[in-house]
Amino acid sequence: MSDFINSVKPNFEKVLEFLKKELGGLRVGRAAPSLVENIRVDSYGASTPLIHLASVTAPDPKTIMVQPWDKNLLKEIEKALSQANLGGSPTVRNDVVMINIAPLTEEVRQEIVKKLNQKLEEARVSLRGQREKIREQVMAQEKSREISEDDKFKRLEELDNLVKDYNEKIKELGKKKEEEIMTV
Image (cartoon, rainbow, N blue to C red):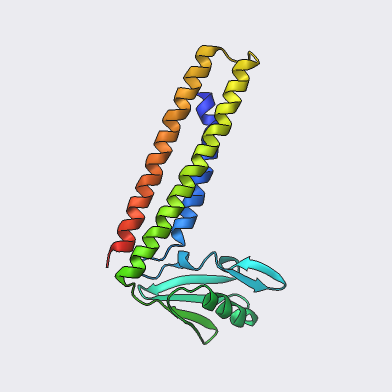
């Protein structure tokens, strides 16, 4: 793999990592800590992701359990979880917030798949933006005679192949997530 590809690959990895994080927040038919980890909670005058304030587990496929490290935040956590519209209402029991996740209807599953497709398209657009930025840099390098015309074409071809690979990865992530969502 060329130095050029190694230098631009982190840009594409960031897009993929962000997409994975976004897809983790999409609701599937069962409880998963990733559904609530990034929900923002007002704590000590700041908005903080839940994962920084509590331990989040899924003791069974229909329940998410949130154990705050500071018991004084129970009400704020419960409020944030209520506002998140997770399809279940949070309840406080013994210094723990429990959320029972209701099963998804076919209609709700279709809506989630629409959100999934929007997120996949946003990732593809972001990839194209990265590609365009890098492409402009390569063209500028050739124009300023830092690289030859042959090098320019070689780099652009490598860049296109890299973008194709990442588009495939996005497609695969989307396919897996859609299967998860549609599985009853």
